[in-house]
Amino acid sequence: MELGHRLLVGSDQHGLIQDYAVLIGEVDVDQSVPVADRLLGRYGVGAIASLSFDKGFTRAADRALLELYIPQVVMPKRGRKNAAEAAAESTKPFVALRRQHSAVESDIAALEHHGLDRCLDVGLAAYQRYVGYGVLAFNLHQIGRELLEQARRRTELRAAA
Image (cartoon, rainbow, N blue to C red; front, side, top):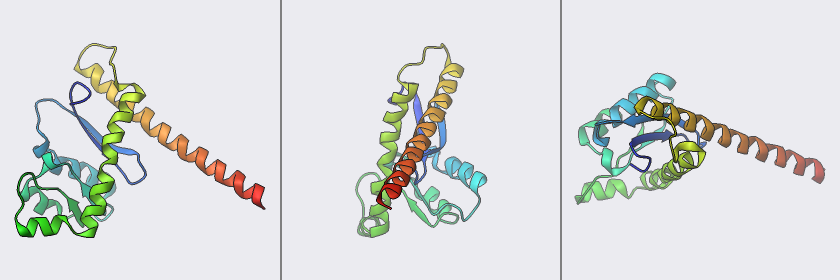
């Protein structure tokens, strides 16, 4: 809710935003299957090794469905956990993926920095367009930063040789 409307953001291991949606009148818990469906439709079954969600997305039936198509589904349970749930959430793969998930929060802050802090146009359609532009600007910034880093490494290798 940081940007005025509920915004769903999904990024990959390289820090690029792969999926986003402006949620109007929708709740998080209803979004896990549609997000996975969009990503699986885009990349294909078997192309996604893991998918991580916030606690607000947790629904046991959705987790079971997603685990049929995605090997590692990280959906921390809200509230008290029984012994089996606590054990499942303390495994090394779960903990490692959960730690990587925090990068999404910084992605949302970076979106604000890339133009989503204030929408100068009026209306929902204009806001949705601004979100798309913000995602594009964010991804271009990430790609540019990686290209600069690669150029820096090449320069260092040439200087060392």
